[in-house]
Image (tube, rainbow, N blue to C red; front, top):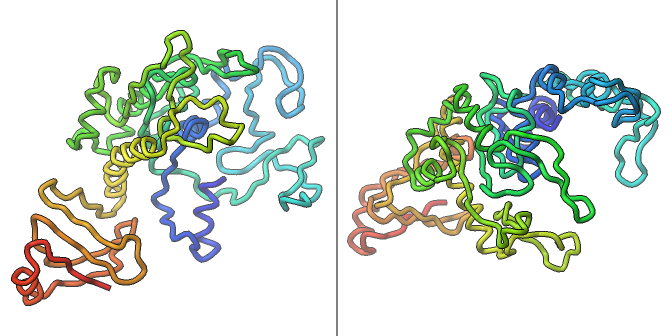
Length: 361
């Protein structure tokens, strides 16, 4: 529904978010990683109805209070609606006095509030940080491309194939076997779903390190592996499986966190995630008609300050001369262009040195 709502904002509400409905990506972290991979791959009922691990094993009461039989799938589109937002319409009996959200009659079968039904829900790319793919059979040719980040020794969500382990009252329970990030991306690569990312042409340090990681069997593209080991082999659950996180140590909800909780270190991991992701986003955007340039050679350094700014800014270039300034938005659309007069360049080179700033407003 969220993707449909974003598209509807442009169609019905004057584009308040300045989105391009033809290029939408999803990124999920932890539990969101499961959601993003599922979103990329589940697009028909048989994919959730067929795997026996997602079926009730005996007759009884289902997760929404309805009667079920052995073999019925957990996901019932007659209750929760389908991928286009139709079906399972809820019975609204009022509005919550605090949140203002609609109250659903729990005695009726429907749980779907069909907002923006029929608006396309497809995305161009998904990125997962942790999590896993519920079933490898979900992936089909033509599904959205996948880019993954995963800790090789993640105890809770497997890197290859394996069990999802869930902690309850200090004890861990194996829940369901899934396809980890490495397996999911390998399948997407094999089907050609990731060919639009053109990852084999990327020779930056992050891409090279990712494909040559010793745990990356087959040197798969589009997965970045973190190799942190558990601090104690007898407690594999005490592992930095989400190194991009930091938190307030005074918050009691963080008592079981396993990361070092060093903000500067976590920010470096986020930088790695962004450096690996953005060239692939650029290639995906170019594939649908944008013109997203590549990074400058390392011999050329470009800085701008202040950044961000709503007024004037300075651009400083080392190793090259500025002939023209073009500022683009995130979608690659020019929003400012200015040629640098030859006299201005010559004057700066004589009086300011080779690293002279160019001011633009």
